[in-house]
Image (cartoon, rainbow, N blue to C red; front, side, top):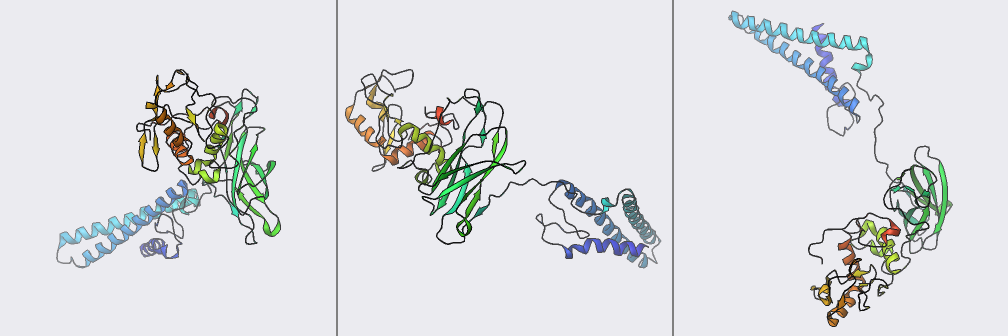
Length: 399
């Protein structure tokens, strides 16, 4: 019996040879590994403990037997060896009894298996390219915002934007299938046409829930599709400032503020938001002055793509890397909503600052600084329409 127990315990422990690769690189016991779920891992630890105790008892039994055989002339050593053999046998007996007890109560206690608990993993977005080389190929798809709330002004859910990027897709039409994540049912389909390999479509949820979408272009051999990389959570409660009925925040269709161009800047993954802000502020026009941000003498203080307020912010000349202290061109402090008494006192500096502000690269770079690379749009009045993340950046240097 003792020999059988020893062989069984050793066989269980050495069964690691039958194992596949385990993420945690732990040995496989009895043909099973630690698994991915917490329950299966704990089960693994229990079985591993049984194996460890069994092997330890077996080793004690072997060592005790060797001591007993070599202690014929030493009564004390012989007694110690007998005690060790008895302890080892008791240890094996305890392991054997525990296994029998657990197997009687529930055989699953001694079978290392995944108990079937769900393992939560983030879904991998699926992208399918066309079979015909050179056709439109969708390369990315995502929501422009991951939440939508009930709008207490319009009495509807806030409209959300879906965007997709492609390759060789200009002029192609595409469909967005919005799916309820819980049921996987398509709740609505909207369409659009690619411009400059970008396509944006809007959708207004009808009820609260969690949604994803699939965008599809082409047919048969030219079919290409992608699943959204994120999920949209629609809540039945209002959140954030209410948006005026009919408010829209569309991306710039052309010029330096297109999504494609802004993705190559520090705006990067926030290029859609940046493009929307730019389009509302200046319609994507490079040299447009503000018609409302005016000093007391009628001079405009906000210029260019993102309407940078030169009475409040310094600018960097890219040609020389020199910092122009534009606020010094004004008297009576910078222009603000509560202080519109500013006047231009240094015309030369003012003109130089305007020239920089209408430089697309300078304007975008300054917008990056003031928006924390597109993550904070609290400084822009356009965000009352766009409703992106608010708040201001800490800008001690104000380059």
